[in-house]
Length: 302
Image 1: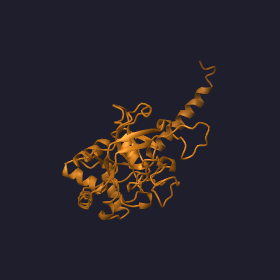
Image 2 (image 1 turned 90 degrees about the vertical axis):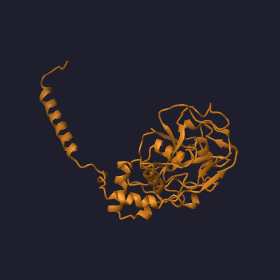
Image 3 (image 1 turned 180 degrees about the vertical axis):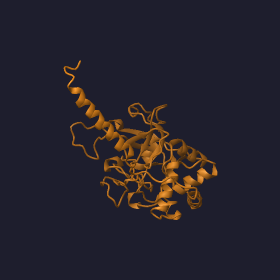
Image 4 (image 1 turned 120 degrees about the vertical axis):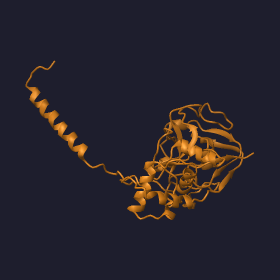
């Protein structure tokens, strides 16, 4: 119970000021919101799709590799040491031979797939493309080799299946990025730089500051695979299991049977350098459409 009624006028004044503040905020323009794309964008979507080029595939031989990170308590935190306890412990994992896309799936390839299969292009992607064309005057041929983005996990998996492929398991993705010796980054131990990878960028409109899928050869993995660190983060097939590493099978681990988030690997154009570590794990709900997430596909080798 209040000890005095003298506080009521003060409370009323506070509530009035709060209401005024909320009214001002609701009327304030939404920063970073793009204009809705008109129907004229459709011609550009078709033009970008016509310029699609499929990615070559890199072959990963059967064998063991180091997956995960060893806990080293008391050591100074560095790129080489533990960052996230979902990576523990480091395990020797066997994978059968497989192939993986050398490049991330491009924007041209995604649009081509959506059009051929009568799937709608999301409003987020339509608006982004229209903004890039109408405000920044980027031509269709420059957008076609961008990485696919604003793509859900289901769309990514459907694309791969349509190509006779599938999304990589976490283990397949990590072996492709780390090689057999457990590299810190796809290119080795050297800290990320702007000459090796695309990361650490920011734009008020959430415009992805990405590079073409076949660019930055200095950042390739030992298998010759591009942009496994930075540019666009990548969906994998697996559910994100925070406690999966200690119990996963030692041969061809399939990932947890269920979960809330799908595993996303590799970091993106917005990421801090530590997120580009090849062992770093992330996740997103399968239905998320993000300017930071794309994908690549894998294929089994019999």
